[in-house]
Length: 428
Image (cartoon, rainbow, N blue to C red):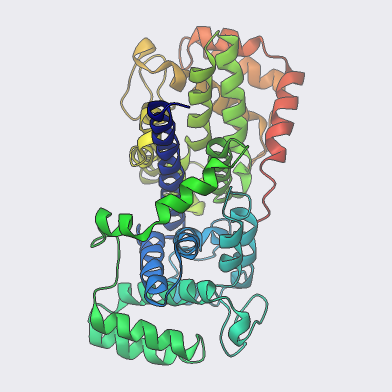
């Protein structure tokens, strides 16, 4: 390979590597949104964990594991029912499901390419030095230092959101950290606190990141993958989104799969069909910030509740706009609840002013919503769902999209959805 071609290849691979990191960061934001934490909690834990890991002499590969484990340490909480969704972090520690979330987090993250080691640290980030932690009652040096660092930085960030005075924060942390972490690690953390400012989303800079060598490790690991890690990561993202609401498990994967098939029936090239599919994976990302009480409500929504629901496409689009490689998907997601007659939301676009990808998502989303079970009703038969979609073509739906959709048989959709269902087998 010529020198110039090698440089171009390395640049392309570097761009792909940044996509992976940015998508995982966006997933961390969704986790925080779903759990009601500060929007940067996962990122703060990741950065402070890397800082402490660097201080105690961990290498670049270990720092990479710390970064991703910190971002995703709470992913196992997303699907848990909370009787009181306003409960704070400390109340949540006594929730009956709490001991399960590290195990579920491990199962989810182990499905992400190159993050198998990180998943183990997520499993053990609530273990305690004295053996009183969970889920495995590990003790002492049996707990990997990476897991201890994640646990310590998690406590620090949450406590820091409560106690803003640094002296008060340090005083409060003392009894909490004792017996929970290795004495040497606690001492190292206290030295970091005394010597410098703890890294967080507000003070961290790109030159510092570049100096850590994590990007080089990322590139080396991702270059060797034979799977489509971009799509696999988005599928995991979709599963986490749908976990917030028990009746939407697999919904985003089914919408993505059916949307892609409709696009193919309409003659779209592979690249555009794949883009519409990716938008389908993430179209409901904004819903994770909506209370289950609203999502599961069997009766009519109040105006305030309906406005919360109508805000979710905009929230989904805003999230995608934070990820460079997904920014061109944001308009498709933002407008998937527009109506062909201009009476939809959020922008009341009409007809062909609505992106074609959004018009496709609208039909696929409606079909899956109608044929899936909900808290207050059983799913409708395929025939009835099709009749409803036909009834509202030219009103809610683009007639060309409806025509393409109708060419897909009920049996083909069943097979497509079964395939999507296999990819959503995460147990919450």
